[in-house]
Amino acid sequence: MRFHQSQKKIRLISGGNRSGKSTSGVVEDIWHAAGIHPFKKVSVPNKIWICGSDFPHGVAGVLVPKLKSLLPKEWIRKITRNANGVEATFELNTGSIIELKSFDQDVSKFESADSKT
Image 1 (spheres, rainbow, N blue to C red):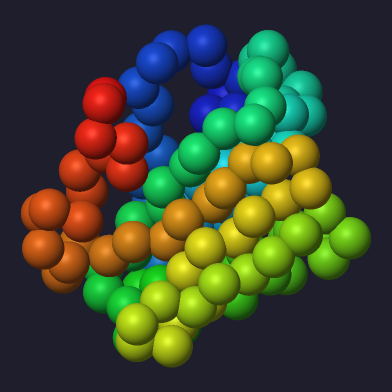
Image 2: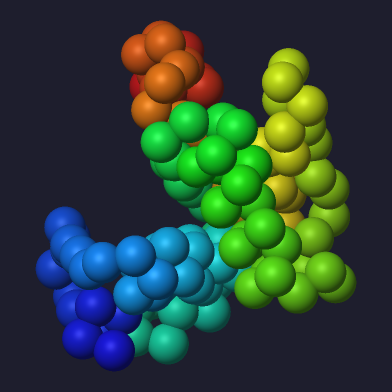
């Protein structure tokens, strides 16, 4: 709960395998995308990037199933697959977008989607 309640801009959660790191992060992301964070004022729509170690394991194997298990289906407007066939973009009814990326992607994939920013 201290992780979720913290008002710090940068927070860290660490622990061993199966200690809840991914779950805590995905819950935070869902709260932000839905505009329902219980401890922070959040405006929607917004765009959130969730990064995993790689697409086959970190993203497709861990983050996509975690996101789909915690995100109510009725909140999802659209899911789009990336070029690798992985469900990588979740658009919510709030207009917010959760985009899954991996650390093995080229750095240019992490540049702003809007060339004016």
